[in-house]
Amino acid sequence: MTEQSNSLPSPGKWKLSAESEIVRNTGIIFTKVGDETVLMSVQTGKYYGLDDIGTDVWSRLEAPIRIGALCAALAGAYDGAPEDISRDVLALLDKLVDNGLIEVRA
Amino acid sequence: MTGYSLCGWKVASAFPLPDLAAWTGDDRPADIVVRLDEVPKLCDPVNETPLMQIGADGVCRFEIAGVAAYRVDAAGQEITVAPAVEAGVPDIRVFLLGTVFAIVCFRRGLVPLHASCVRIGSKAVAFSGNSGAGKSTMAATFLKRGFTILADDVTVVDPGASGGALLWPAFPRLKLWRDVMDGFGLSLEGLERARAELEKFHLPIENAFSAEPSPLSTVYHLAEARDPRHEEFRPLTGIEAFLATKHAVYRHRLGRFILGEEGVFALASKTAAAVSSVRLTRLLSLTRADELVDEIVRREV
Image 1 (spheres, rainbow over the protein chains, first blue to last red):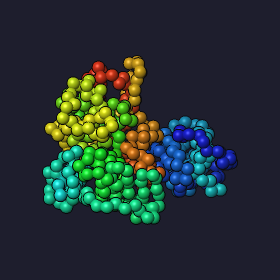
Image 2: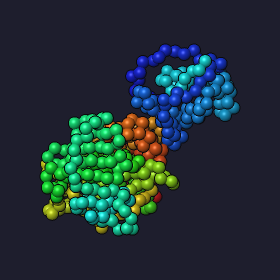
Image 3: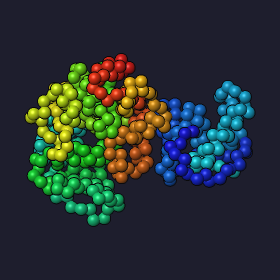
Image 4: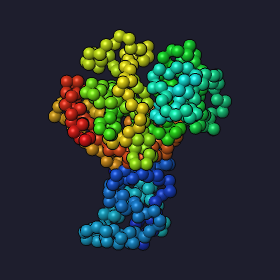
C-alpha cells in the first residue's frame, strides 16, 4: 500500500489474529483504476493506493470476515507457502488498520 | 438569442459569444441559457471565499470586480451575467468561459481538465500541464501537421460515458503565448487580445475544429526535461494515475468548493480509470516538436 503522505499518527498497534474479524471502514470511498485501487478517507481527505494483490484483498473485505478465513481463501488463490501468504496478508492488514481503512470487530 | 455549441450542449446567450462555435444541431430547447440581469450577493451562503459564494440550494455566485458578477444555478443550466462594464468587453467572456464554465461542468458531472486535445485517427489524445507547460504548443504542432484540434487549454471529459471516456470539444480557439507564435511564424495582427495584460492571443481555428465527441484514449501529463537523456514516456497506474489526473483537473480547488473532496475524488478517479495516463517528460524546445508528434502518433495508432 502506498500513501500520499505519512502525517497521520498511528492509532496504536492492534493485535491481529486469525480469530480477528475485519471489515472495510464505511468512511472510505474507493475506485478501481486498472488492476489497482485508489482510496480516500472522507474523514481525513488522505489518499491511498493498493496494488493488484492489495486490490484483491480489498475486494474480499466488503463483508466482515475472519482473518483466518481470508488467509485460507488467498492461499487457495495464489502460489506460495500458506504461512508466507498469511504473513504478507497480516502485514498489509496491519497497515490498513493503522490508517483506518479497515476496522477490527473482535 | 444566438445558439452556440459547447461540449455538445446547446447554449443560448443574450450577448454574442464569438469564442464558441455556432449551434448546428437540432432545434431543441437550449441546454444552457446565458442571461443578462442583476446578480445580487447571496444573503445566506453556506460556503464563501472572497470571489465566490455558494448557497444551500446549490446556487453559485462569482464576482470579478470591474468585470462582472455571475450566477450559476444548481443544475448548471442557467447562467446570469451582470457586467460591470459594457457587455462586449472580452474580459467578461474570459471569466464566463473560464471559471463559470468550470462550475457548469462540475454541476453536470463532466470533468474539465487543464489540457489541450488533438485527434489522432478516431481517438482523442490530451496534453495536460500547468500554465506554460506546453499544452498549446503541443496542440499547435499537431495543427501544423494537419491534425484536428479538439480542445485547447481546457479539455472536457465525460468519464461516465458508456464505452469509455468521451472528450467534448469546447472552444474553436487556440490561446498561444507570444513566443510560441513567433516560433511558428504566425502573425499576431488581427488577433484579439485574450486579456489586456496577458501576452496571450486567441487564434481562431474554426476550419480544423470539430464539435463531435471523440473517445479519449490517453492523457499525457507534460513535464519538462532539462537534458535529452531524461526524456521519457512513463505509463502511470493506480494512485499515480489518480494523483496526476486530480492535479490535471481544471480549477480543482473550485471543484472541491462546489462538490466537496469526495466529489472531486469521484470525478478524478473515474477519469483515471477510464483513460490511459502517461507522464511525458521532454525538452520544452520547439526544435524537436516534430519528432515528438511522430512518437505520439506511433504510440496511438
